[in-house]
Image: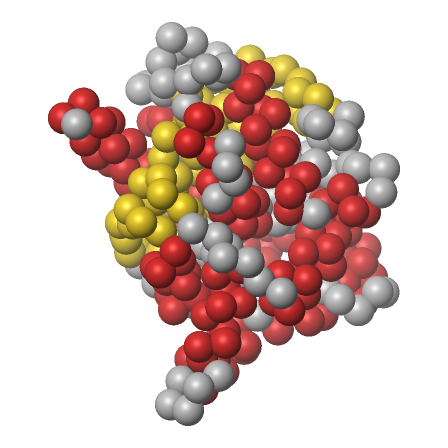
Length: 294
């Protein structure tokens, strides 16, 4: 049974969350991307909740969670604070296994490279959500002679990021019907014929701030973001938005990295829920086995 609860983040924003699975089991925290809400994980919950207390929450400004009062509340350090606030609410004193998809993955990178991470996070599984700082360093490498082809391929995939920086264009598209027809777009883009027909307009409009408040500052002035935790990259081979090369931008920055490739598009939690759930479980099993042997 799913049990709803609220978490108040460090700046007072109320986050709507749910937990399912045995309360005495290790905790698995799933962070969704844009323009989704926590329901994007629903197809994984029956399998994951056999072995874990599984926690999902609506990222600020999406689903049933409150938006911040000011747009700077969408900056990555605050989003990482949200993750730690949820962890402290559901698993105080016991590190959780963290999973992020799309913008949820980007937020999770901010958390796993934070000094607080070793005391709060045991493992991280990243699905199509690269660290913006890693991407910025990777883009600089691609600017060298002989690497331009990779850069051009990713530029074609990332066209929408530029569009989101035009003040009126993206909100107008969402309000003109993009949100009402989001399930049809998922069917065309990733072949997800049974996606929920929920209206994503408000989440789509609010979530544009994620791009505007974070992408350019990190691309212009990236930081060195190392991660010592066990990290699993789940690479979607047919992802229309994040190329495998961009996903692998984490390679120089993660001390303990494993890579899994799935023949799928961007929305794996909807299209490949069972294989994805097994990869998440495999990663946690490997890490726990190694911890016991140490």
